Length: 209
Image (tube, rainbow, N blue to C red; front, side, top):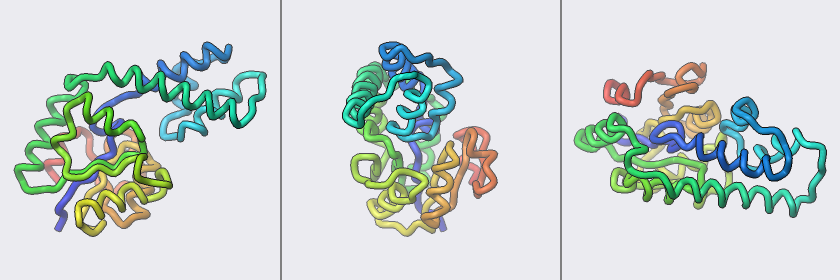
């Protein structure tokens, strides 16, 4: 019997794609590298440093590892500045009412996100109150598709993986959930992924599981 839901954050509970895009574009523009929506699509589910390498490959200059680290930090600071403009209205009423109903039914709720900006996003959107545990990029050493972030979330809840659903929108997240022994729920792109255990069309469909 399932006792908990562990949610990825970005792409499941909220959407910060536009802030990532603005931050990467600002950096690319400064470096004289072309950057548009097509390039941005290649960065989905990719780590910050791997994303930077993709962008730099579109330019003609070469950079040292120290310069690349500085670029990555510059992008993250821009992104965090944009995130500070988030408000509770960035979370849909569908998400909030679904989480309320899951709590009413007695489920434990947790976050399993590789992002180190998770605390800032939860604070700006007034979402922290919904979750019994938060596992994020600040307490893991391996990003998805490694299952560490979900295993830690289950550990924080005091539950076994088989007692938890993992809700994800990305294939790497589904891979992580499967590797950890969780039952995976796929929304968005992950709903069409062959390894997803339970595809859903809308967030509220979680209530039908």
